[in-house]
Image (cartoon, one colour):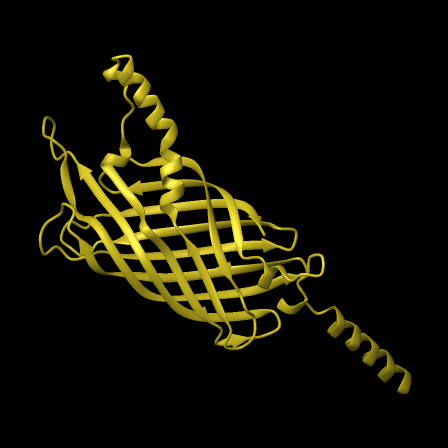
Length: 260
């Protein structure tokens, strides 16, 4: 009996010792969860619209984050997607400039960004969270989301007509609720899953119809991090048109890069 108890105690002690947690994530004496603040990544962005052509592009960008795992600890995420969106357009712009220089106007690429824009603005997208639940392997962190959006949709109603602006259209400032849940998968990786709902509270006048309701945007995403610096992520951002036009737009970002 005593022997069985002793074996059980040894086994349970071994299980506790091998249990993973945010505090035991390590890389060369550092904790990547709390010490890595910057991420650089390659990204594929696809934008699908209800009224305009869809488009896909390859780009690069960077983000900033700050993490604490104790109860009441703060967590921060920031990215400006506009930087990557501008990089994504460089090859097309160079091709267009070459065509214009050679007087090949008919060969100028179709500028789908003129038809449809779905992205951030000058300020970018920022989330701040506080840990409401803190376990060894699990964090639940509600917070707020702040930032700005540029959105525009142009369409041709019938053959022969010029393109018309489709509400909602403009440069918007946003704020809304956010929540993130994190889980330690193993001693070498963890996952962050997040949702935020951005309500547009102000608009810089930029086309569109006076008095048309400002849109809302829903973001759902997840990032898979490793202690060896590599990470991958996917994020879906969807427009909610609150007006009569019932526009629809979804932006999908798939990223892979390094943390440091």
